[in-house]
Image 1 (cartoon, helix red, strand yellow):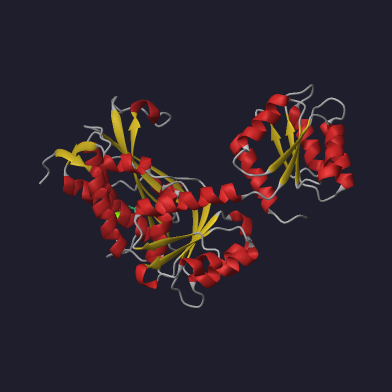
Image 2 (cartoon, helix red, strand yellow):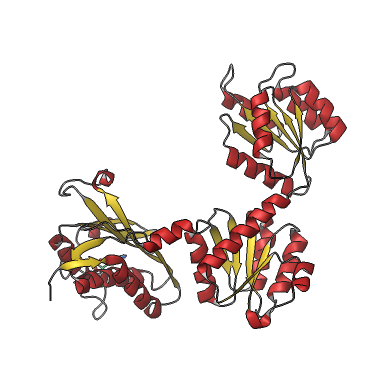
Length: 434
Ligand SMILES: Nc1ncnc2c1ncn2[C@@H]1O[C@H](COP(=O)(O)OP(=O)(O)O)[C@@H](O)[C@H]1O
Ligand SMILES: [Mg+2]
């Protein structure tokens, strides 16, 4: 039947996700980004079919080489539709449904025909050419729009815009906002692929950047190849070849300050002493609740930030305001900060205190920053320097360029992007001295 009533598309999307998870090959990763919980006027079985047809095409496109299929659901306002062709869009809010794949894409010579009934590039028995024609028909009858965007060798995105009847934010959106989140980079290790995937997806949705491995040996190799790329490792305890505690030990040989969270069943619990002996920062007990993992991760990452007490920074800047602000921003870091208001004083303090890092302004009285960097490098070729340039007499970027050439590790311009500066400071102080 084609009867229409208010329906919640997110529920249908979730059903479809469940269905395709169990039917499409494991070489295809499935992602979801369901942000809209709004209601449209429609027919549940038609919308179900719409998703299935698009997902089937996406899966078929990635049959040979695998890839990623993603279902997205967001609300967009009419005004945000620009620069899409506005023609035909009545005012009001729209739900945007996307089904994307990383398959071979659709070539320009056929893309104009794909919505036509009976158009197919597939062999007999594989395709009827009716899938997209049906989708197109459904979308049109709902006063919506369908747009295809495809890049050869990269993939295809089908975007469907459907008018929203009731805009709704349900508790899930609310809950998501409340969970502690972050943007740090995490390595997730579990020998069971579904768990590794689920854990990574959960953390990604909280904002973290996540890499996962299903083998502890591979995880160790990855970490060894770029130890400074990760802020945290979460690992399962029971794994073949190398158990989680052994992996943790190896990781800390490479980078002693890397925090590790060990996931284990209650029954396999290892004692707190054993844990702290090998430097495990926290446990997560399986099955892992999303909220618990979110909290533990944030806690461990914040603890780690507070523990960075090893490091002496020399800050050379003629502006008292900037020095004060810097000290204030770094207050929780535990670093020792020495201040100098000009290059001469900076050099003198450098010789006295041998700091691990020098942050210097480039345009100062007495001794210009450029000169200071030159002399510091003469003093110690391995000295780590961050150069900061404010709006000066000449283009500040010219100074930054010179500073870089002289061997400054990083350069920043004013106004200072504090979070990024602080992150850089931590990174530089984490690296072993040159
Ligand atoms: N995600 C996709 N990636 C690449 N090609 C696609 C994709 N979706 C559709 N196509 C192309 O559009 C054609 C028509 O699709 P469809 O109407 O669903 O019919 P069928 O799948 O039965 O061929 C397909 O044969 C294929 O060439
Ligand atoms: Mg099809």
